[in-house]
Image (tube, rainbow, N blue to C red; front, side):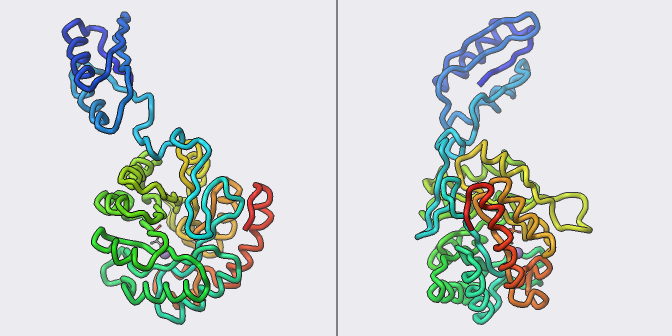
Length: 343
Ligand code: PEP
Ligand code: MN
């Protein structure tokens, strides 16, 4: 940490900063310039000292506090520079795995038949994980909220039949136990990226978490939020770029932030997925952005597939039919090969 003081700061002010640092077990390296006084804080900063920058910045003669190392310690790339693999049975997700992870299925589990038909279709087209929401975070309380427990049971039946592990969303800390009885991977949706009580509850579990980016979250906010899960002891977090708010919702729902993929790769060791279904919101745009995400280095995709998109109870406009999905997977092969991955 580097602390910059107004050049008029004298011994008394410098001494005050030195005392605060000493209390935190850090020593101070003071350089007095003509216009500024620069103090370097020496020593390891652990989690408890993360409040220090704010405490120092509150002093009237402190102009700026700059962090030299990243505030998210467990999520930071430095923690595992070669990249982390998250394992869900035979499915291995991460930058060191040639096989891309493709999570596919409907937005919502609507009934037994729908999820079974979709599960068989996505499995035969090469998906590695089955998705489907049983608890749906809907913008309007009157919209379909998901089937709840019966939805989880249908997912489990689809897993038994196809062998595909399942990922499904958990909305609240009190549902973590129930959802965990059925799912192989917890999904945290965009609306809950900053639900810290939920993130702490998931940190206590030992099940992988597919952690989607908040729709208006900066990359730093996203990684700091992921740190909540890891700091609880659950290291199996998979990131997922799913689009952020833009100003043009007329032609697509979100701005699919491709930049996030290589940017996150530099900052964190965690696996990175991309969700061009929510990222675009428009079925016709999904295949191109799926290819782009893989070309940009994503470790896999999340894709919404519905046997009859026109009848979907949520996100029908972005749902691929099973045939569309099969075509998309075919089209992905050459792109994957170009970046030394396989689908
Ligand atoms: C979903 O995956 O169906 C979903 C609700 O995604 P998001 O949280 O990204 O909107
Ligand atoms: Mn959806």
